Length: 415
Ligand code: LLP
Image (cartoon, rainbow, N blue to C red; front, side):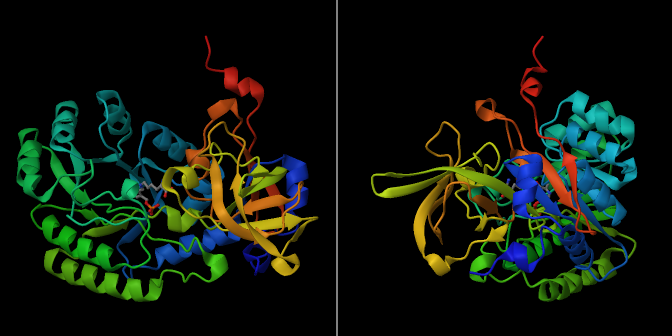
C-alpha cells in the first residue's frame, strides 16, 4: 500500500510521532504547499480574465488558511456573521466577500449591509426583508437551476428536494418583489451541491442557470457555485477530477454566454472542498483494541466530535497507520477492522469493516483528506475538547495555527 503522506512529503521536517508528542492527539495537520497548489488549480479553471474564485470558508475557516487564500488572490463566500467576522479579521476587504446566506434575521442582514458586503438572497421572503432594511440597495439572488448533484442527498442543494434558492417559476415574482423596494439585482448565483467527480450534471445545470440569468437585466456578475470533488479513495487509485477537460467545457459555455449577454459581466465561483480537503489530515492515537463478537474494534481518540463526516454521511476517508514515525504497510498482513472514536454513541465510527495493516496499541492513525468540513464541523460533544491545528509551512517546519481547547474553555459561556 502506498503512503500518500510520505509520497507528498506531507509532514516536512517533522514526523507524525513528533507532532503527536509536541501537540497531543487528536491533531489536525495541514500542508501549506498542497493548499496553495489546489488554490492555483482552481484559479485556472476558467480561461478568462473576469473570473474570481470565492473560497467557501464553511469548509475551513482557520485564520491562517484564510490569510493564505487572501495572499493567493482569492475572494471569499461567507454563510454567517461569524464567517464574515473571520474574513474581516483575516484581512479580506468587504468588497471581496460575498454573503450567501439563507433564512437570516434583520440583525444578520444588517450586519452585512452595514459593512457594504454583497448579499445573496435565497427566497422572495428574504428579498422583501432585505428591501425593507435597505430600500434602493444592491443585492444578488440565488436561483435553482433545477438540477442538483452531490455525494449524499443531504448535500444536494438544487433540484426539487432542497430548501435553497428561488425556483424557476418564482423568478418573475422575485424580480417584482425586488422592484417593490427599488432593489437592484446585480448578481445571480447558484450552488447545485457538494462533490461531483463527473461534471455532467454541473455543466447541464450551468446551462440552465445561465439561461435563467437572462431573465434579469443589469447583471454585473454571475456565480456558478462550487462542488468540485476530490478523490477520497486515492490510496486505491481513484482518479482526480479531470480539470483540463472540465475547464475547456466550462470556458466554452461561459464565453459563449458572455458574448451574447455582456462581456463586462464578472464570473464567480465558490469552491470549498477542492481547495481545503487534501491539504489536511488528522492524527489520532490507538488506545484500545478489542473483539466484540465477530468484529475487531480499533479504539482511537478521533471521535465523531473531531470528524463527523463518516457518521453523518457514511462516507469514506482513507486511513494510513504510522508507527515509530514511519508508515506501516501491509507486508506483515492486513485484516478487516472497524475504527472507532471515544464518543458515547454506537454510531461513532470512523471506518467500518476496513482492510488495514495489523494495528497495535500506541500506533498513530492518520485520516486523509480531512481539511474540508473537518474542524469546521467539529464539536465539543461529550464535553470533549476540540483539537489543535498545525500547519507544515513551505519550509517544512510545523507551526501551531490554533491551540487545543482546554477544560476551562468549556466553562467560558456560563454566567
Ligand atoms: N457555495 C455554497 C452556497 C455552499 O453551500 C457550499 C457548500 C459551497 C459553495 C462549497 O461547496 P464545495 O465546493 O465545498 O462542495 N458538510 C458536507 C458538505 C456540505 C456543503 C455545504 N455547502 C461534507 O462534509 O461533505
